[in-house]
Image (cartoon, rainbow over all chains, first blue to last red; front, side, top):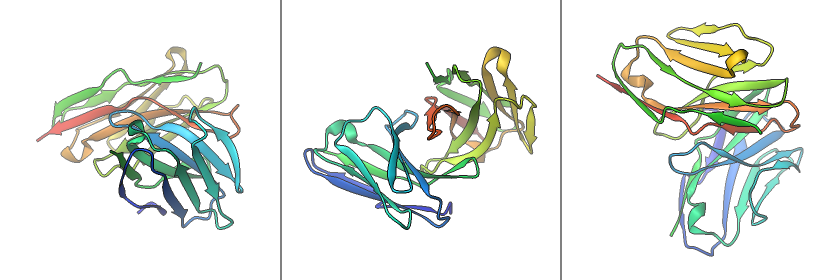
Amino acid sequence: ETGVTQSPTHLIKTRGQQVTLRCSSQSGHNTVSWYQQALGQGPQFIFQYYREEENGRGNFPPRFSGLQFPNYSSELNVNALELDDSALYLCATQGGGGYTFGSGTRLTVV
Amino acid sequence: AQKVTQAQTEISVVEKEDVTLDCVYETRDTTYYLFWYKQPPSGELVFLIRRNSFDEQNEISGRYSWNFQKSTSSFNFTITASQVVDSAVYFCALSEARRSNYQLIWGAGTKLIIKP
């Protein structure tokens, strides 16, 4: 148990649909990052939120968007899903120089 | 450009053998951090170690040890007397201080298989 909880754990969506993934932390750290990990690859940085503001973004199109709430929980939204969006989505909180990851949401787009 | 290379895609050894996982990185930053994470089949990334660029001391933690060499831009990870429970995918990652968000740049991972 890492203290970072992601929901749902698995999800199947149809191409063109929209999806919302959620992340919450017991620690109350004010920084959360989202990563996409395609099968057999290392994670790729999507974006980070710090105190409810986006603080850096990787090479992902605008249809990937996020939110961070006053309790520091976070959402990742993906619009107009594509087959290539099928991946494990990981969120991580940062604090004390370290990163704590959740178990991820496995998204399958069909 | 910043980059992390894990050239070994998959390694298979018999239990109790020693195994070394290689990691080579590229960065223009003088201040950076290197990490190793373990990812078992459950998918969760388990933190193993963080090293900053000013600390080249090798580190040992039980059966795990890390060799950081700035001269060759490498940060290798050795498991001594491997066990079946060590089977997982291992990732090396880099974080640069010049990026305010300290985003992690990951290698492709090395799948380690420990046979009984």
